[in-house]
Image (cartoon, rainbow, N blue to C red; front, side, top):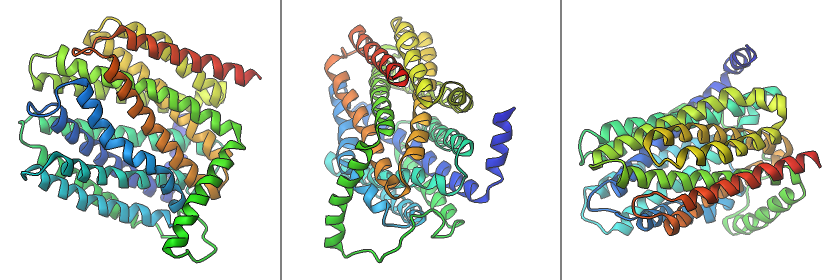
Length: 419
């Protein structure tokens, strides 16, 4: 099979293996940390108890650093990306340990959220750096498409596995959140050690001048952001791909919040049962991500990147809402798999389009903007879901809304592709 052959070629590249290992450990830690926070906030009896409150918690964790996200790209284009991976993961190790200490302390909720926000804020640098560095360790063309299928999807699967591990540990009892967060800290530290296998210059960017002082750097950040946005505005292809990805991410986020509410209030009699159902849903969606990694290289070769994005949106428009209307765990799990395939297939295609059509000097900035759109879409989805969802999570209105969005994306992409 061509997929197996291409995968073997990639795995023979030492630098690619090192970057992939750093990604897997880092995103596995992200999965552990995020699930630890979700279970602590959502499934603890004394914590959030309504869709609006849970959406507010998501906004607190995601929105602030999403708004600051574009500035990370300018810094990524000035700093050695390998150093970002090393120091970023070391910093997250310390911050995760501090978050664990706050859980056992009698502190206000805002202080806990501030600490958790610090961990996830650093994550913006690390993930954007991993994406921007990928073209430095593989050749272009088919290798880059395969690398974009393998690396981000493997990272997502690692996050899913980390989340599954956190779920399993959390099911052992209601008071083990501290140990789960300390596990995330250990994985962050291992990712930092893995980054040492690569030389500081390997991942770029190609720095030709001495970095300016702080004041100059701040001004350069603002100017650099404007330049990056102009660079994106001049290139309709990556801009269209990012727009499609943002809308599909919004749909996936809205349905994720709905499933969370169903697991918490409608499908289970106890918090432990609801947590177990949510864990199964996450694993099924992760299987969809894996299937996308297998299918997307063939699909992109057959239909083109935008043709595959249109197919992914069409799958969501037809299958997801149809299965979800039953509002029972079985059909909803099938929908989770289908939407996992579509969402991850769109992301792989968008990654490839952006990397292939954006100049290397701007790539860090564009991926930082990409990351911000990714998170703002989820926050927006959570806010809309909070307004639409009833207490038990069953909402035909929400399913109709995401069906319309999926359909519009599919139709628009097909028209632009033909035009």
